[in-house]
Length: 276
Image (tube, rainbow, N blue to C red; front, side):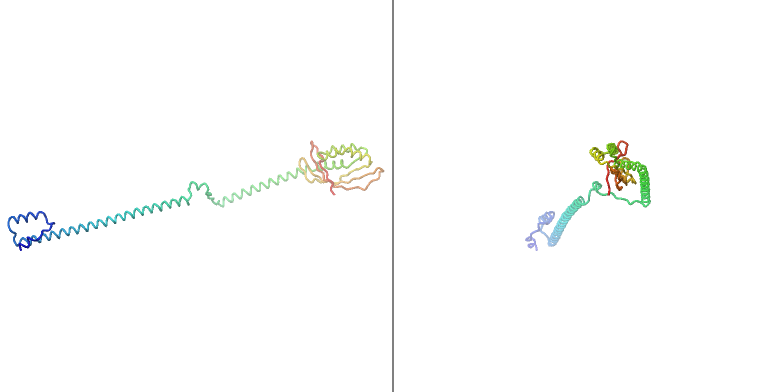
């Protein structure tokens, strides 16, 4: 038994404190049979404990490695989620900038909201409009009435001027031809006066040579239109012509449109149209 023990190698992981004891025991004397199994049992127990500690250390190291990898993976996922959220936020902000107008700028083009007026307000507005329309109609009627009255007041004056002008224009006495033509000129104005003045000498000469007496009687005068300074009158007249041998021609009826113009405070003929 002693020979077999001396040939066996002692494990390297045996405690250092046990080695001196073995040496001391060797120096003190040869080992007994009871000490050898006890030393082997202790060595094996120590080996088992060392292996258990090593296994626990390897398991702990593996656990720490897995935990580190899990932490790294979680951190990476967190970073990716944060970047994704930032991207989504940026896209949403860009869409909002594109699609949603700035409230400050939207006030420039957005039409204001129109509130529907209340029935009472509408009724008051309609009443005011009706009152204004009634006042306007009343004012127009008053103005129209005054205008008609004023024209009625002017009508006799223009009718008298038309009557006198036609009588002067169409009544010629060959013995006083130049005086009659001058009266026609004095009763005319504007273009009509210029035409008669240009032909006055020839008209007087023809009247004196023909020896024909013409006399006009105005039968009716109607004022067609009139204002303060001008008017148009329709004149119905009959002319009686006497030849040089004192024979009379059949009377002739005339319908004449006479334009009257105020000239220097007097009403004079400015145009004469013979109607059929």
